[in-house]
Amino acid sequence: MNFDVVIVGAGPVGLSFARALSATSLNIAIIDRQTSTSLANPGEDGREIALTHLSKKMLTSFGIWQEIDQNEISLIKEAKVINGASPYSLHFNHQDTSENTLGHLIPNRLVRAAAYKVAKESKAIKIITGVGVDSFNIDANKAEIKLSNKEIIHCRLMVAADGRLSSSRRSMGIPSEVKDFGKTVIVCKMKHEKPHSNIAYECFHYGRTLAVLPMVGNYSSIVITISSDQADAIMKMKDQTFNQDIQTRFNSRLGGMMIAGKKYSYPLFASHASHFHANRFALIGDASVGMHPVTAHGFNLGLRGSKTLATVIEEALASKLDFASVEILSKYNQKHQRSTRPLYYGTNLLVDLYNSERLTAKVLRRLALRFGNNFWPVKKLIMGQLTEVQ
View 1 (cartoon, helix red, strand yellow):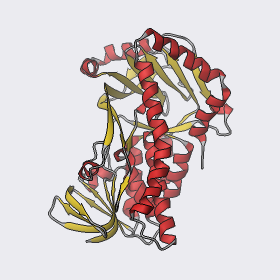
View 2 (cartoon, rainbow, N blue to C red):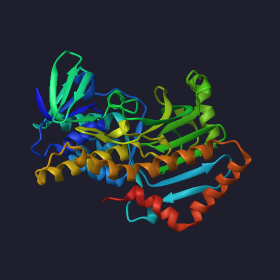
View 3 (cartoon, rainbow, N blue to C red):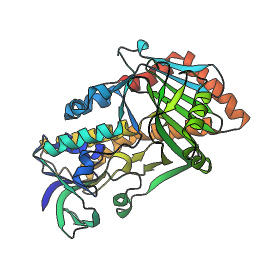
């Protein structure tokens, strides 16, 4: 089998990238170990995706946004960052922007299902499911990929979208900085008595972080970041004890709170590849940059990177150049590195500051919140990132 582009990984970023290229003359394949059934109907995983306006615009242009049940999309109209037990908060409000919301919150499984449906319906995209990549070899002209079912396929460009522990990236010898926070993220859905008024909260308590994100109706997504040695105790908590614990830590802002469904846990680490390209090879999504979830940049950056790579390829095709050459792919690398590095290191610095128990860090946290609230250029910059559409 011969293709122009082969994408390893049928996650929402890989599928979106394929859709972004589907309007070109290129023949595209996506490889994934999951079955077509599990890709079409992803199971509940407890995760919610916070989307910026730019991400909504891209998903709409790909035809993915239209396939998401609009009744499942919640608006984030305000966001508050709280430090410890202090009543003071860094406050962002959509009324300070030209948009009617700061962002959108959508269940991860719905984004995955919509992206798969759109990609599957495209005649330019072939999705090969139930197989993985055993090995591959790339020379000056092509990539040869040996699948786990012993079939061999060839392509002009291989794109790795296989997660932050990307085996494709390792096989190419591309180093990646990995920051293990020694923490676990626990997520679940909770029902509450009082309306959330579409306000998202990020509470930096000492020793743990609690995010409360507004879902449709009187429900919120709860995201706990805790030292991994304490995570098991939270996962095993009885519902009544867990409900009271979250309600107390959230100062009963939403009244009584009740867990609605299972708790899910994920190890927390971030990663950033030293470069995102080689000859006839590129990295996108978490294979290129895996972000700490505190700033909700992960999927948004993945979409931005896939769009950047697709644009670089389209420009090369228009100029009748080899779109998979090092020279062309280096343009993608330069652009996406400029977008990701400041956010990656800035987010990690922020996380380290708000997780530190040192007295100086606690003082800096209080100062940072007040500075962010009262220095308008900084606040405008942050809200501009959320609501940008270009």
